[in-house]
Length: 171
Image (cartoon, rainbow, N blue to C red; front, side, top):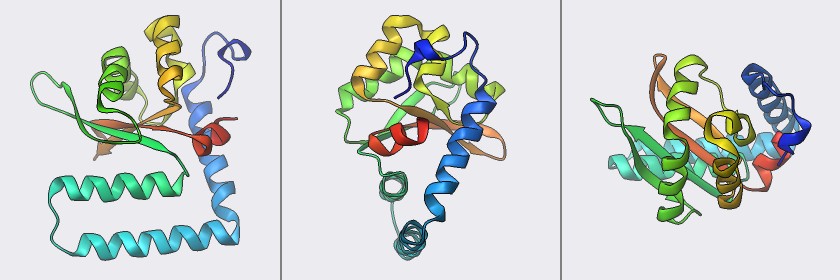
């Protein structure tokens, strides 16, 4: 993961999104990655064509993302209504208690951030909002990146990803 001390005092959220997108595109440009992505999407489409529950669908999508980004851990939260409170829907690789701790640490900061910018954000870029102890906690849990879950530009929730694949994209 990038060292927060090597960054500017006010990280540019658009810059992170551009780096993340460019690194993902570069990773997908190799023949093997492209073939893997295509096979993964075909398998996902086949699985989603059957009748699945909401949780089975979320599981499939989460596992697909984990494969695409070569992550070892992922979690997804959806926002409840009035007030929009995050609810942990699924987590893989994280202990449920660890995912809930991550949520408690940065839920407010993520809701504010994603209301303004609907691009993924690297964990270190939240340091101003969550403080050094919050950042250390997220790093200890292995959270490298948060990404919004949106529909028609409305924030529905977010997901957290970690692992070597995300750390490599962030470098």
